[in-house]
Length: 221
Image: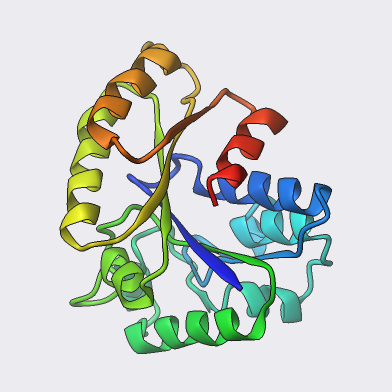
C-alpha cells in the first residue's frame, strides 16, 4: 500500500478536485486506488449532491449509500466551519486519536494506492489543541500540497512549505490549481513558487483540469 496525504494551503483551493482527478487517472490506467476524506464539515442532506464524499464515491465507481459514505468519511459535521467549531455546534469533540487510527486501519486494509484527503488548510484546527498538520505528522506519510493561483497565494504557499519542512513532512509535489477569475497568470505563479519549493516538483493544473496534468502528478507518486 502506498498512502499519500493530500492537503491544501486553505479551503476551496482544489484538494477534492485533485484527489478525484488522481483517482480517475489511476483507475483509467488499471491501477488499484482508493480514497478517503475522513473529516468533512458542511455536510448534510441539503448539501449531499456535490459534496466531497459524493464526488469521491463517483470517481471510485461506488454508489452513494450510507455505508459507503461512512467508509470514506466517518467524521462528518453539518456546519461549514473548521472541524473544531463545527463539532462544538453539535456538542461533540473530534477525537484526534480516532481520526489517526481510522487512517492507519484503512492503510493496512488496502492494497494499491490510497489517497487521504485532509480538511481545509494545513493549520486548520481539528479540536482544541490539534491541527491538520498534527494529523499529517502523526501518520508520517508523504503529502501533496494543493494551492491556487489567486493573488496572495504566493505568501500562503511559501508559508505552508516552510511549516511542512519544519515538521519534517515529506512533500511529493506542489500542485497549483488555476483559480477561476484570477488576475495572476498560472505559469508565472508556478515559476515563482518553484524557486522556493525546490527540490519539490511543481505541477500546474489548468482550469477544469487535463488528463496530462493528473498524469504528471501521478508519475511523482
